[in-house]
Every structure is written in structure tokens, then in C-alpha cells.
Image (cartoon, rainbow, N blue to C red; front, top):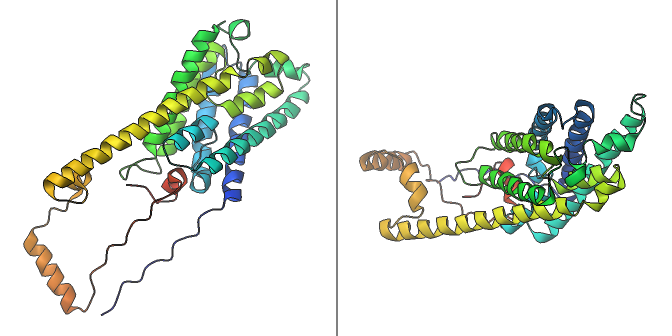
Amino acid sequence: MTSPVQATPEPQPGLVARLSAEALGSMFVVVAAVGVGIFSNPGAAPLPAALATGLTVTAAMLAFGYVSGGHFNPAITLGNLIAGRIRAVAAVAYVAAQIIGSVVGAALMYFVVTTVPVLTDARAAFDVVAPGFGDHASAQTQMAGVLLVEVLGSALLVAVFLGATAGRRALPAMAPFAVGLAMAVLLQLGQVLGNLPFNPARATAQAFFSSPWAIEGLWLFWVAPLMGAALAGLAFRGFQGLSQAAVADTDHFHGGTDGINDAFDADDEPAEDSEVKEQAAAKADIAPPRAVPTVPVTDDARDFFDGKKGK
């Protein structure tokens, strides 16, 4: 009897490679967001900067998602942590890499701004894209309004990320477009209200090169998006628990191994055809494939883009 040849699994990217991907992707996002924002006046015309940032997120996820999972945002990392899709140590390292990459991207754009003769004050140019509230917001949105929009927007963004990269029916090629589109739509609203980035790392990088008021109000753009991310992560974890309970109940009723999904994914071939195929395989001296036990993944976000989707 011959046994089927099993493919050797590809090695998983190491933590250094994953952190490098997160830093590079975060730098890419900040360069596009800050650069387009400064030279297009996002307060008066938010669409160019919002669209450019959303497309950059999509491109970065397509380019680096298979390495690190394509977070590029501490809020998304926290949502994945609470949802049980990344380890705590790796999550802390991810956030550090995202901040470093974002600051490097902002520093590069700061240097570019200093080379433009018509922009005599680089910090004033960065004030145009720095997040703020009250007198420092283009619409003079008060703190309560900014807080609410940041919490809601971050929760929606994290929910889109978690939903687009979860389940065996999800498509890795479509997830970056879903997240990038969600980011573009949210930024279209956020920039009018006060350059809300829905990304604490990006807010930190921009505040470093802006006027002192940006640093003073930076706390809000950490607290609010992380609150929204925590809500989305808890909701996703709860949905997972309800789904598992529903699967267990269906399995008990039907006697199957994957009640909900198998009800839709079961083959429609008759039992007679299956028996004929088994007899033909036995005559051809081919052993039927054996079920390989699934190994729980420790980083679903990265494994999703690597073609190892969790069930």
C-alpha cells in the first residue's frame, strides 16, 4: 500500500520578521497619510487624504500581511489580543514596532516639508494633519464628540478586520480591501471633525512634529481607540463562543463533527458513488487519505494571509 506524500510545511516567519513588517507597513501608512494630508488640506477636502490612506492600508496588508498579519495599528493589535488571536508578548512588541515605524515615517515627511520653500514653518504644516479637539479641530468639535467618534470608528475598524480575517469562508485576497475601504470611509468623517486617525501610533507620530498642544491632547487618541478596540474584541470573542455552542448543539442533534458548516459544505454525491470510488481505490492499491489532526494556531491574523485559516 502506498501512502500519499505530505507536503512539508513552510517555516513560520520569526518575531523579528513580523516586527519589521509591522514597522515598515506603519511607516508606509504614515508617509501617505501625512504627506497627502499636508499638501491637500484634509479639513477642506478630506477625500484625497482619506482615500490615499485607505489605499495605503490595503497595499500594506497585501504586501506584508502574510508576514505579520497586517495590523499597522495598536487598536487592531489590541482587538486581536482580546479576541485571542495573538499572544500578549507579541502584541506588546507589535505596538512598539508600529510606533517606531510611524515616527520614522513622520520624520521623513518632516524632512520633506523643510525642503519646500513655501512652507516656512514645518511644525505649523504638521498642525494641519495633527488630531485635536476644541479650538484645535477644524470643525471645533468638542472632546466628548471626538471621544465618541474615535471609540465608534475604532470599534468598527477592528470589527471589520476581525470579521474579514476570520472563518474558513473568508477570502485572504479580499480582507485588505475590506479594511482599507473601512479606513477610507472612517477617515472621510474623522478628518472633517478633527483629523481623527483611528490609529494611536499615527497620532503619536504626528504629534511629535506638531505644536505642543498636539502632545497635550494625545492621551485622548490613545484611550478612545483602545476602548473601541476592546469593545470589538470582546464582541468578537462572544460571537465565537456563541458559534461554538451552536456547533456543539447541532453536532449533538445530527451526530456530525461540524454541524453548521457541514450542513452547507457537505458533498451531494450519493452513497453508492462513494462505495464505488472506495472499491476502485482499493483495486488500484491506493490508500485513502487519512485525516490530519488540526493544530491550534497562535496567530490567526498572520496565518490567515499565509493560507492557514482557522475554522
